Length: 143
Image (cartoon, rainbow, N blue to C red; front, side):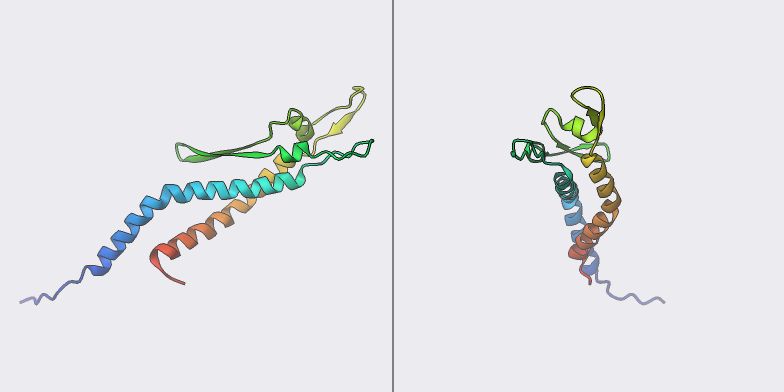
């Protein structure tokens, strides 16, 4: 004849509570992650943006100061999006290049956004892994 003992479900209940809490925080966590990655990119693109030095001795900076993040994170399917932009009218010419004023030559683009985006794309997996690890440690304990 089989002998039955007591079953303690306390740990299972704690696990359920932790996973439920984690599920509720998931969207907020992802939005925060997107904002952090965007902020890193913004720092990079601002550093790379040239500042004009003019013949009369004045120094520009309008283009560098123009960089902005639209803090609204949108979700399209499984993709989270945030917009980094520069409304200064000549930003695309500095980014991609342009003809000289006399149309006889070409000024190469600086690719400050393109290069920064490439860098952040390479760095993103490590950033995400670290954040997810910290989230899981916080939720489930551990070292």
